[in-house]
Amino acid sequence: MSGDESASKQPAGFVIGQSLDTLSIEDLDEAIKSLHGEIQRLELAKGEKSRHLDAASALFKN
Image 1: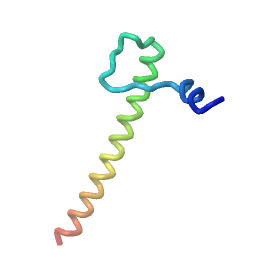
Image 2: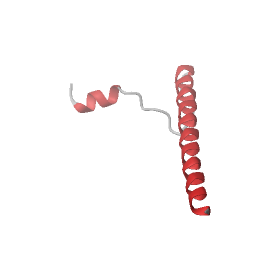
Image 3: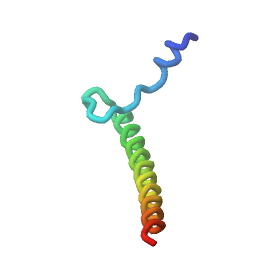
Image 4: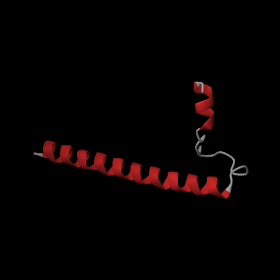
């Protein structure tokens, strides 16, 4: 199996803004699950950055 064949068997993934007309219900469910996971990841990163900013701010206040 060549690299092209293995790459073509992997799901393309969901791209924000793409047409939804060609997606099946299963594809939509996968996209929703993926987006929920990405939102959670973004919220965790935001919280971590906020904590770092707060700590730096507290350090330089004194």
